[in-house]
Length: 394
Image (cartoon, rainbow, N blue to C red; front, side, top):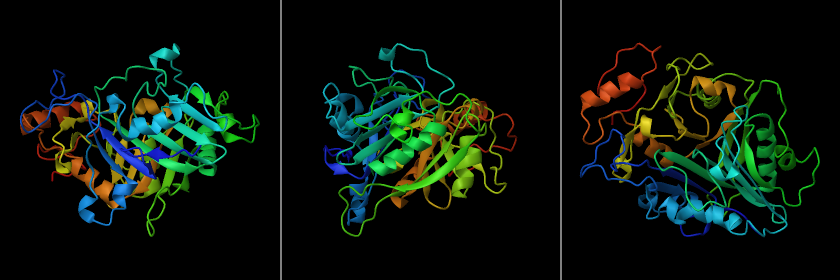
């Protein structure tokens, strides 16, 4: 069967992006308050954008918007895309396969996580007869579990990027994962792929090399071009990845220099990496401290302490990188990677959300104190309440 990303209504689409909001205003300590300017959220709401919207000839329709669906109600693009493969999980087509991986096992797996494996989360799904498939890269721990009846914690913000691909591209991604992302795989079906050493999807499901050579890399690929109108091209993207032996920071030492620009990054900040120069000695990488979806018409705002997403934007060249590894010292010793691509609408929208202005019901004094409390101690530049280093205050 043909496999691709599916949009909010279940139609085939070339790619889509989701930003899930954290639980807000429901008793959790998220630092945002809950008043008429900041909607409460169960943690399953999200904003959405895809290639069909991006190709709309009417520029007024090319917007990232709050979805009418909820992730936990088996609705919308995420569940439709997964269900197209995993609804037939018990009796799949003999040519349909998948590889599911996450650095945190779902509870049903019943195993302890292997810290030597990559800090990587995602799904590769494919069909060998139609040579179609997709790659879903996301940031949600313990997800997905095709047999589960409940969802992982909705407490934190998360990101999801799904790209429709041909089988050749999926094989190239699998080959890269073997030596770089080093994923912790817990559910796989390689369909009718030969169990041979020259078959990347098969090799990916086998035990990892115990001591791989230190390595980081970037490869250029493109989407499959599913349901694109005439004149609208396939999505070019870079897969950027490193393995555990490389032992440097993914964002500061690899993504920034690869994209050749300064970056603002939103990741799980639990380390001591100051906004220092990247390894190229030219550019810098900064941590985003607040997310505010208000500019997108979604009245949600929260500090980075309530966000588990892993994404970054360059400051000039309109690159977006959606990843599964954080900017923190401990993850230098983990494999991981991300997908970088250029899109004016999405880049502009994410640029507007990366704020450090006080969210509703939070004073600028409180905001400044929170930033000071979470600021990496090696960074001693003066901090102004209105704006943190590297971030827009618009």
